Image 1 (cartoon, rainbow, N blue to C red):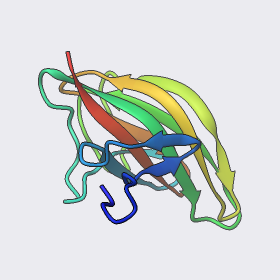
Image 2: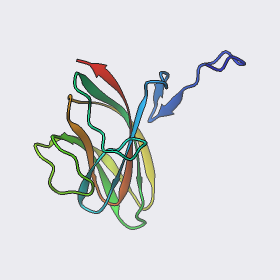
Image 3: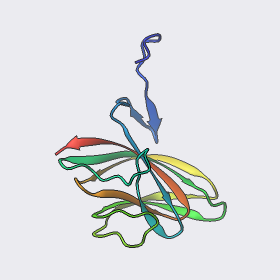
Length: 138
């Protein structure tokens, strides 16, 4: 909390305001052309949802790093992990969230649940996806 001004720090992504920054989980996925990548934590380790918890994804920030290619934003989870892979097992796809292209970016709120022991991942084309989420006990 900002004692000087009496205001708690917050961040806003895609119109969603996050106030519990201490428990906020921020994960990143770099996705090459026509592949899927598991989200990684700040140690660059593939993120697996812990046993006994759901991962609730509440916002995404996506950026295309290709000046000429549009990138679909697709979120999912699977039983296994992989970077720029085409072989994730038992993948469950959420709705397509939109597109970024021409080296542009976007932010949006969402509300997806990834079950315990699964790996959240993203499909895409030459793009970077960052998700903002919390763990919830099941």
